Length: 197
Image 1: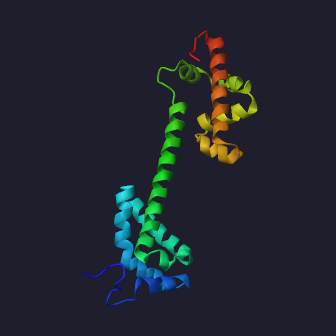
Image 2 (image 1 turned 90 degrees about the vertical axis):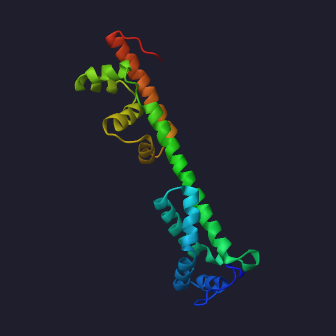
């Protein structure tokens, strides 16, 4: 049985020849490699990311990466097909890591930002007039007031605020937590309610 990694198709050049052309910047060589291995690359990416659309993006990204990294290919270290598929595998794993990191950050943001339905603080804020709420917010330090306003009144995420303010996300979250704690204390004093710290 012929070795699919070293036997060139009857109608085209071998993989190593195409890689040599790719190293010289020949885009047509990339297109030929893509035609030859995109199906295998897509199948591998799909197995890893378990999503056809994401697998398609990973495959495209991997071939563009092969284009950029062509000069790093060393035939003495292995054949072209495994080299290409290793790029696909790495891009797919990178995609999963980004997704997990994004999901984890979103879940954490939502977990501490979401208020329970029976939260007396949320009820009190809903019952306050705009003027009263503004007065309470004015009692906060500017950084805390600004962060709370951006999140609760303008709908920004903590990550967006951190980027805009050029501070770590943790700093934004701390400012919001501290500001909310102060607001709870003020509301508690005004309404005579007891809040769990």
